[in-house]
Image 1: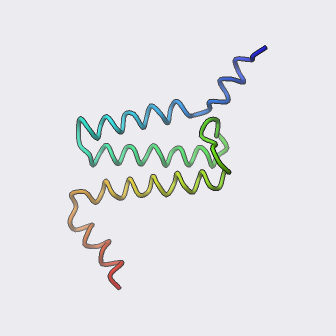
Image 2: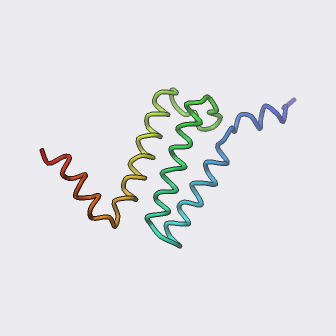
Length: 100
């Protein structure tokens, strides 16, 4: 016997994150790479927050610490990269931080 509630619970927020990632990728190709990359990074960081809060479901692949760290870092890099695409002032500021 399969309990539908348990099966639905095991997926957790995975369909929501997958739908958000699909919207971000479509936005990258059809609209603007900056906004699409920002949306994709934000969705990945939401996935990290949900995994941290314990709503893992299909998001839980490895240990909780590894999943949260990997998702948060990847999401942050995506958001930062999307912000740097056409912003020369922000690029110069960030490069000046590493120029020491």
